Structures are given as C-alpha cells and as structure tokens.
Length: 272
Image 1 (tube, helix red, strand yellow):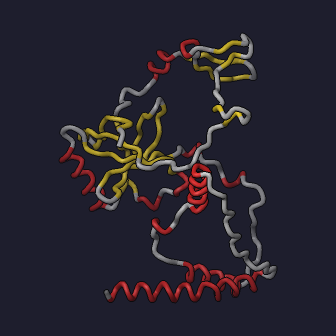
Image 2 (cartoon, one colour):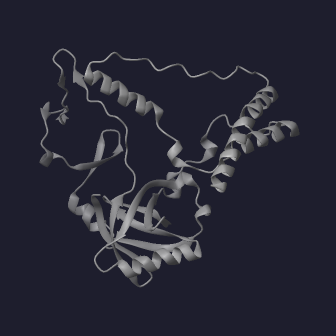
Image 3 (cartoon, one colour):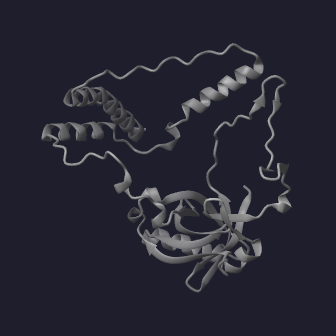
C-alpha cells in the first residue's frame, strides 16, 4: 500500500505516530477518448481563451469567483499562512456511539497504522475503543482542507472516515415530492413487514458483485482477442401488478422459499 499521509493521532496528551493508507479502491473501468479515423488518444490542454494560447503550469494561480467574471486571487503563501498549525495531527475532540452518526455523513475511508514508536499507544487506543464500544470524532487537515473525521476500529486496524460537516449535508426539506400523511392500511403494513423479514439476512459483502463491470471486462477481453460479442440475456421482468396489496402478496410468496432455503443452509452449517 502507498502511504498517503504521515502524522499523529492526538489523544489527550498522548500523540500516536501513524501512517495513512487509502482503504478503498475505485474499480470502475475507464475508457480513453480516441480519434476514430486514426485511433490516436485525444489530449487535453490548458488554454486561456483570452490569450488564445496554451498555459504553462507556472502561470496558473488559484482564484475564487465572487461575482460573475470577477475573481479574488489567492497565493500559495497566503493559503499556507492560514492553515492550521496542527496540519499533521488527527486531533480527537469527542468520543461518541457509532449509531449516532447517520451514514449520509461518511465520505472516504483510510487505514491508519502505527509509525515509528507508535505501536503501544496505537494498541492502547484501539483496544480501549473496542472495550468502551465508542468511536472518536476528530479534525484533520488533508490536501489543504480541514475536515471532520470519525476514528473507529475495523477488525484489528484503526480506520479514519472523513465525514461531511453538517452544513455540507443538504436538508431533506429541499427534496421535492416526498409523500406525507398518505393512509396505509394495517394489512398493507403487516404484509410489507413480512416481506422485509423474508428478505432479511446476515450481511455478507462478498455475495454482492458488480455484474455490469464483470460483463464489461468480458466484452473488452473479447474485443482484444477479436472474438464475437455475445449479448447478455435479458433478466426476467417483474410482473406488472398495479394493486399494491396484490404486489405485496406476490412478493411475500416469492420470498418464502428463499427464506426457507437460507434457514436450511444455516442449520447445515451449524451441524457441520
């Protein structure tokens, strides 16, 4: 793994030297844009439309558009002057319960490992958070941006989740068309609850695969080998049931067998 950040966790008067690694990876398949007549990849240049000329990196500065066409230019030195002095510190502020944080706040996950003399305090913090079943809320500076973060334990590793600030999460009041005060019958509610219970199972992340990406990889491999392209079969379409209660009943019946099979597999696994 490539180290993306080095610093320390500030835990009271304790400093824990750590290294940071990106915990997830984007496996999207990306295409280059190709000039069809000759097969050459298209290049992109930074061009000033006013000067009608390509711009060198050294000529580029940061500017904030405060009015249409008007920019406040901010230099690198000015940004440095207002950066927090603790830019290399993950500063723990509070300890809270994980269930108190809605997943909408979570952004990106990083693994943290002990660095230099940090082994013992690292293990102490990890084991103490496990014992108290708490996670930490912290502040950290990453790539010239101060962000909130949640520090928690994942398996045997301390991980850091960057989280959005409250003013970065939009209010649901701005979402148009949300239903309100629609009457739902008790029988419809009971049927919906039964459907959820039939579909309920233990979370097993390995069973959820990106089927489209797998088909796309096969398509690309076939293209490279010069093979014929096979169209994916159509998936069975759900019945067009207009009545809500009929749709719920049909769904419950369809999921009963799957639920029974799951129970049978669990019992077999427990007996083995």
